[in-house]
Image 1 (tube, helix red, strand yellow):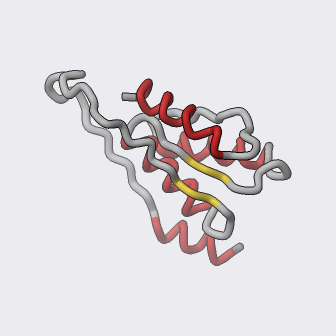
Image 2: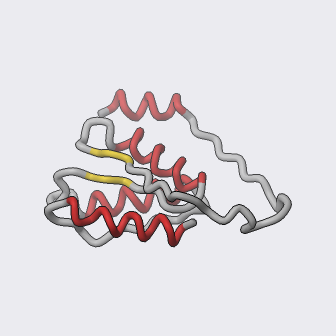
Length: 116
């Protein structure tokens, strides 16, 4: 699924005037994902006019993109683009190996946004 999404993302770069080098964020931890995105945006803050976020991997990565958006992007020109595939191979795994639980504290988010 990642490869299909990556190819769809590459196809859409022709729609934009100038594209910075892509930033790849971890797919295993939403907070690590948000941190990588935050660093990338901070490094390129003078070069970014419109920011397009496109999660390509796991549900945890999508959560990280959303958390980054809520923490840092509500007052910026930012869009989240989902590169949907026409299909995918359903038989990539069998069974359940582990379950991850992430706690997003929206009270912290509210306090953070009130400080800005």
